[in-house]
Length: 173
Image (cartoon, rainbow, N blue to C red):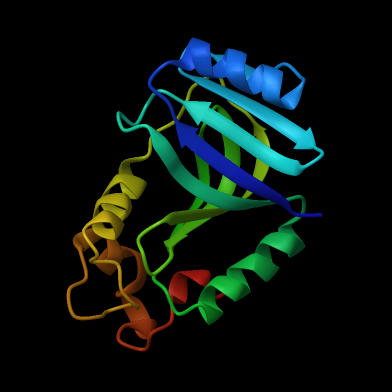
């Protein structure tokens, strides 16, 4: 069963934890010095906050899946959306190990699709995502190999056999 993921960047992590603890009526499932997460069943959401991005507000949305088959299904939907996709594959992010891909909606809002495979003691490195995020914010994220692909987009979807086709060869499994 899929779960909605919401990640909000906050300026005051301690104050935000107090607020969301009261709002959700529960303690965070994960609490770190720069990050907290609630895995809620009502509503069914993976709600995370962090003080890492520097700009308060919705950082990204996502769909968390429970099985590799569900992830494959979501990846298929990403192809149908005709938006560039950055497939990170196996990665460490937000104190978790996961298999994931990123895309953005036409307004540049980032969407993450992922399957969590384990926990991590470190937050993780978002180096590949940083270029993709910057391109989305600047409006450079357009269907694969569009007029102005940024380097991260070009690397993510404009190399190999699918270049110029509007599909992402890295998602074909």
